[in-house]
Image (cartoon, rainbow, N blue to C red; front, side):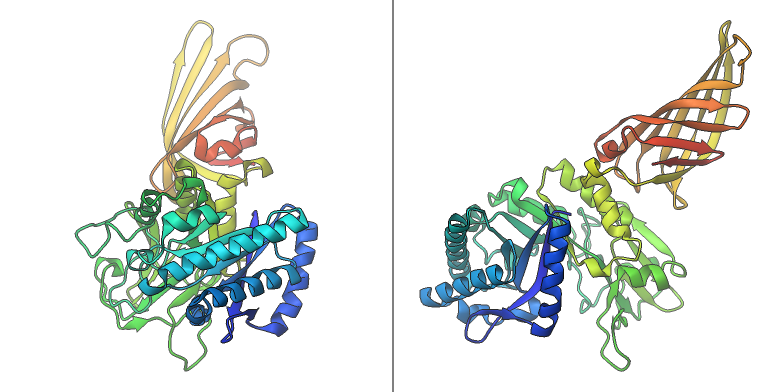
Length: 449
């Protein structure tokens, strides 16, 4: 984790940056400062706006004087509360406000640079930006990106709770293009639109959503996918009697749904979903597998990183954060990887000097197939250790539900204990953080840590 965005500050009716909840901020801001002291490399930004706090952007940017007033108050709010930058989350400028948005960002950049010169340090300026074409056309990407440190692309909400057909909220790639707008309503299509507009790839940060979307009244056809619904399902935080929001935190999904709802995976969209025929509820969401694929996509396309909305929705084990960090932070060490090796074939070949033993089979993770493996063991018929220990090379070829790639292990096989130990000697890009880590295999269980 490199940056924390605090959401949100509001734009007041008078066009100034103010606390959304002053009582909460009085508690949270000092805690953020303590966090920064403990993690001096992490920077914090105050995010101004958000869906609920955007209406006053219109008046606050309508004239030069209004933009100057708003920019001045945002910089003052940032400095007063110890932030390292400002994130503007205007949802969303209209066609008539396109130039006003550009001018606001130019004014903010000017004031932040001036403040940075006086303080002898840089200050950051970012925005939260839409993935949908209808809102994107009202943003002049070619004009604004030179003034921004990066753009947080809200690459989710391709399907909303209000949608009458249950679909995916954050598909990675084009999928089932004959249905709806699937060829253009996906993460990759949004990324490509920004790149075509001239945004440098390293300034584009892909946003991910740690909450899923659920619909009720979904008929038992196609496991609920692309089916009609009767509205949003009751979400994680919906009070009794309140209208359902259809919003499900990942921690709620793991605690109450993954254990009873069948899980499905779409090979083209590269995302999971849950569906229960008995309840008629379908949930589109992100999990460690889909986020691992998205992280690999970001690395492969040399994008700026991944943004998370929002941290509190993760489970107690931080499963979603870890799925991303495992690929993005190899210097901090890879997380333990536990796999099941299901042997399909074992062949012995003897020669004058000893024996080769060849093994192959399927690789499973959390009871789901993620690839294949092949291993060779070499035993030399000399001395008293004959047939007790063998030199081992084992390669795992990931595919399907894991990002494509491979890991090669080298070590020893002890025939007395049946245990294999050694280290990771090589790995392709998605798994390079595991190089040098130790492995052990007992029976069909392989652990790399």
